[in-house]
Length: 208
Image (cartoon, rainbow, N blue to C red):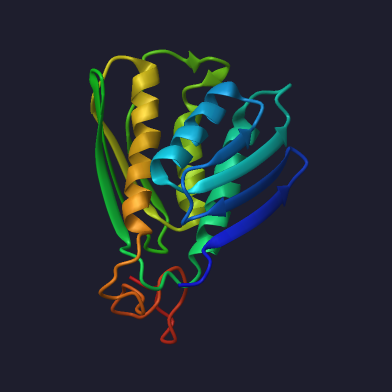
C-alpha cells in the first residue's frame, strides 16, 4: 500500500487555505481557521477518524464565517480525494451511530466518486460561539462534494445544539475510518464492478 498522504493549497480573494492529511495516521491535528467552534469540530474529526489533519485558513472573517467554513470543507475534501488515489483496496462504505448524551445521530457514506449530501439535522438556535449554525450543512456539503462521497447525516433526536453538531462530525469521523480502511481480502482491487471509483471508466460511465 502506497503512502496515503496529500497536501492542498487553495487561495481565492476570500480565503487562503493550506491542508495536509495522512489517512493512515493516529488522529494528530493542528487546526487554525480563526473560527473557534469550527476548529473544535475539525479536531474531533481528526481524533475519531485517526486521520492526521493539518489545516490553516485565513479568510474574510470581518464579513462573516461563511467563506472560511465552506472553503475549508472544499480544501479538506480535495486533500481526502487526492490521498485516496485510485481507491484500491478500500472498504468503501462506512457508517456510524453516535450517541452524545441526549442526542443520537446516524451517518452513512459511500466513497463512490458521486458527491451527494442528504442532511436531516437541525438546530434550535442561530449560533454556536461565533459560528452560524446554518453553516454546518454548508461545510458537510462542501466536503462531500470535493471528496467525491455520498454522505447521509440524520440526527434521530437531540436537544442540545452543541451535542447535535458534534455528533455529526464524530459520526463522519467514524464512518470515514471504516470506509478508508484497507480490506485485506481485496487489497489489490478497486471496490467497484466497473473497476474505477472517483473517475470515468473507459466506456465513459462513472464508477459505482
